[in-house]
Image 1 (cartoon, rainbow, N blue to C red):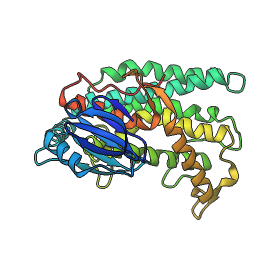
Image 2 (image 1 turned 180 degrees about the vertical axis):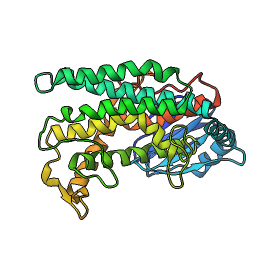
Image 3 (image 1 turned 90 degrees about the vertical axis):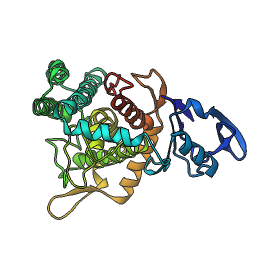
Image 4 (image 1 turned 120 degrees about the vertical axis):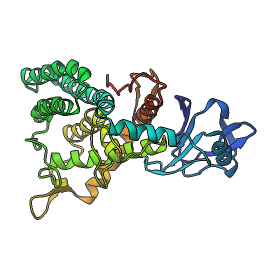
Length: 341
């Protein structure tokens, strides 16, 4: 359990939430573990199977406190809203900004700055940790290319130019991703998807799918529409804002996770099957192993670079969704991207 940004996060799956006067109390087997006054909270996000009392749900609805229910895996289930909710104003602001190219760019450029910063940091971490096993000059050149793009990303107000800068940075990063693979049973010669055509791309696609689901759940839990984005434009069935939010988290959360699985020999070449048409996918047992390690990764902790608070990796999408909602409401001057350190 943790309180961040006036939001109460319940991360244990056996915690029951109840109302006690003007307080929300967290219980495990009738024992009170935490208590917070309702007037100090803007939202509650629970990942518990145990649920919440009808009294607490009613009190949250009356006071305009968002109460979101997610599975322990992170999948969004439902959100309690009263007769009148600030979510209407928040979503109207989201839709207006999404329709305005300049406003969209002001938000999207911070996300792309975060993506490129984190990609560069991932390269630098490999240079530092494995200097004797990698081509440090090649990695250094890619890192410098990305570094040189960062000032232009923060200055542009043109969405097309932003996409161009993002493309240059992504090309530099993916151009050296193979160098970061230390287990040479695997290789990366470019991104392939729908379907993935080699084992490493199969791992990336699976990780990106899981991360997109986590980002979509996070956005819905704070009252944003996961389907209306600022960088990724509207398309039927595409969760564009979730893809936007995922961009800055991909290098540090998904890509580093995949590199760990491969470099530590957790996943091996025999764990894949090749299907008709050249598609490559994880076998069932390997997929379960992947998911086990993914959940373990989400429980690992780090210090959030903006908040300065220690929290699990699994809460990062939810914290970033909260920060995005607050920037749209005008509580923050601009959206602060997640900058991995």
